Amino acid sequence: MTTATVKNQSKKGDILCLISAFCYALGPIIGKSLFHIGLPWQVVAPLRGMIPGVLIFIYGLFFAKQVFKIKKEHLKWFLLNGFSFGFISICNYCSIYYINASVATVLLYTLPVFTVILSRFMLKEKFTVTKTIATTLVFIGIVCIINLQDVDAIAAQPDLYIMGIPSVVFGIIIGLMSGILSAFYTIFTRKLNEYYDGWTVNSWCYFIGFIVFFCVGVKPIVTFSWEPLTMFFVFVMSLIGLAAYSLYSISMHYIDAGKASLLVTLDPAMSVTMAVLILHEKLSVIQLIGCFLVAAGILYMEKGKEWTDKLKQKRHKEIRS
Image (tube, rainbow, N blue to C red; front, top):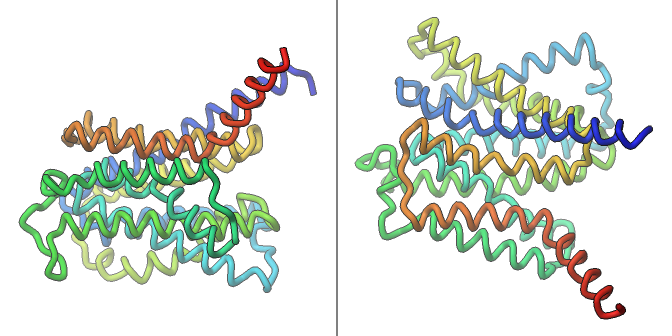
């Protein structure tokens, strides 16, 4: 393979991954817009998962039967991964319903912090300087985003109470829960990726997650007063979610998983930007600083060790010269 071909494939992978990140970022914006016209999260979140799940299942039956070929001893990991996937979406969209989409999205992407903590106990991975710095940045960012001095500023329905607590507090808790579940999902996916390709692993997320989506959404979906235009927008949102997942999987045929995961972390930055421009959400200076710190922590988590190693090599060369 020539150098030009490698560069073209890398460029193609970058573009696919960036489009995937954009599609992921559109999800919360469209979801919030659907909430504004009267759809409850119990309808939006399940349908966003159920429609792609059915489409992927049909595609697998006719064009990719290999996704169904899994070993019995790995079924428990697929179940854990799929249930985590389902509840991540439920928690994320529930959070978006009660608080700003920008804040809910950033809370979802706190997963690197929880992944580091859980990996220490579940996978016996050691804490490193890079992980400690990144975790600290994300933690400080979360504190700034929540901004307890003016927490009602991010509430979608300030006067609403859920199970006796303010809806904004409930939304923050559920948002953090989506980050914790994402960490479990990351660990389970890492385990399954040792034996299966990304398409098989992600397909089973939708197959197993369908159970969660169905149980949560079947009654609200059936009893909701549907209109053709509303159904169209829900279907479009589902297809955008499917495109995000598919393009991300395809991009890793052209670029390595590390680079793909780094590029897709642009998702929260895109979501926050669109939430401000399209939904007219307002963030204080402190909350904007918090978003920046979370993004910086995620970026440092992905690339910090590489940057540190390059800096050490550079210094070593300078000393030798």
